[in-house]
Image (cartoon, rainbow, N blue to C red; front, top):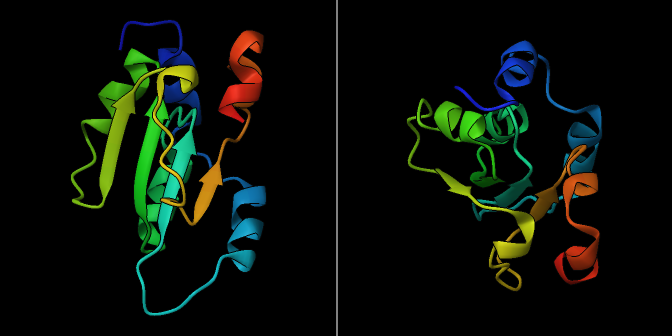
Length: 117
């Protein structure tokens, strides 16, 4: 991991998932269907891994080489990593049951923020 985020990701990769994310799960409809989640600004993939453990199909999006390298270590058919910025990501309508962007939205370019949101 040679980009500027590598040290941060290494320091945070063993932290617990976001408390806000765990709370949000209370509002996600549970049924017979497998739920899907989008983790924007996935960083050290802590929340992505947590969601996988909860049975979600997870798409993680981050523009960092460090995040991409961590994603290569996840061997789970329900996990997809896409290395791109938010404004280049193609948001499919009604694809995800849950979208999380813990601490990530401030990194989106203000010029594209409204379109991304």
